[in-house]
Amino acid sequence: MEYVEIFDTTLRDGEQVPGCKLDSKTKLIIAEQLDLLGVDVLEAGFPISSPGDFNSVEEISKLVKNATVCGLTRAVKKDIDVAAEALKYAVRPRIHTGIGTSEMHMRYKFNATPDQIIERAIAAVAHAKSYVEDVEFYAEDAGRTDNEFLARVCEAVIKAGATVLNIPDTTGYCLPEEYGAKMKYLKENVKGIEKARLSCHCHNDLGLATANSIAGVQHGARQIECTINGIGERAGNTSLEEVVMIMRQHPYLQLDTRINSKMLFGISQLVSESMAMPVQPNKAVVGANAFAHSSGIHQDGVIKKRETYEIMDPKDVGVTESAIVLTARSGRAALAYRAKNIGYELDKLQLDKVYQQFLVVADQKKEINDDDLPKIIEASNI
Ligand code: KIV
Ligand code: ZN
Image 1: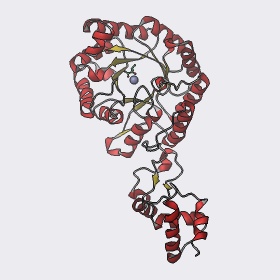
Image 2 (image 1 turned 60 degrees about the horizontal axis):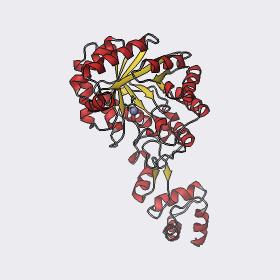
Image 3 (image 1 turned 60 degrees about the vertical axis):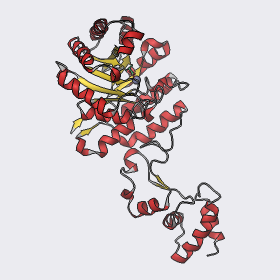
Image 4 (image 1 turned 90 degrees about the vertical axis):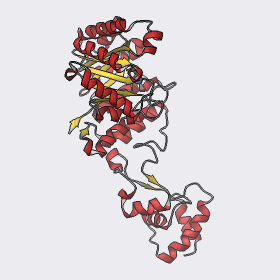
């Protein structure tokens, strides 16, 4: 089994969600939980962006005991100086610096030639290295960067001292096969690659962030950058809970993380409430319906054996139990099960009668709850 490091960026890329800004106190509460969750790296913010962000990175650096604390910068000397200052109390500080490497970014953002971009990348890494040992380099828009040029950039920054190479699919454009092939290409063609860790940083514009990150680690990357609930710019980032549980539920991948998965549901709720960003009910792993069964066929199966319709034990992600939801699509098995839970043991004849009454009410009401059941049983004259 090999470990894939989890780089959490909920407090940096995640916090770039429009209208969901967190105050410093809330950031500290979330950072503490992320450290307990077992993330390997915690990206605390972008220190030069505002005094508030600087302060958060500094306070998180003082607080966090286990994870590496990371601050983002552009490939700009002043950004790096400020990040180093904000990280000075961290037990394990990391500076995350980088520059755009795709044709689009080089031409329109930087108006620079490929050689000038490489020079700036080297200078940024070397400067960051003068402050900290652990320097991560991001090649922004790597997803749309030509692989040969990307390999040249990676080789140059490794020589300058980069310890981690972040290969972001900044625009969420890649297909899993393409993103996996990019990692494989870098593993096979970058001189000195054994000195650095390749990292996946995928955005979800086409709903492929999780699939791309998994393809990345299947082809040699050993770090995934992700956020709780997949929050982030536009359609968001790779969702932490998804990649962690994919690796755990597929042991043949021979990859695992150090995440305490039993904390996933709780931390998902914490981030959702703090940011006033509800989790979609059908969200994988942590959504309200992720372990809820409402159709008769599924309910009958789950009551007989949970694994008929569940590939994860809800307890493993911090959800107390699977839910049997009573709706007009439910069957007798579910009705008997829920009635028994509140103290009504129904025989076959009684169940038939109650079920008829149940259907009448369920056709008018979205969901039948434990308060409705005694009334339905009484009205069935059994
Ligand atoms: O998506 C991206 O390219 C980023 C970098 C700044 C790491 O978030
Ligand atoms: Zn990003």
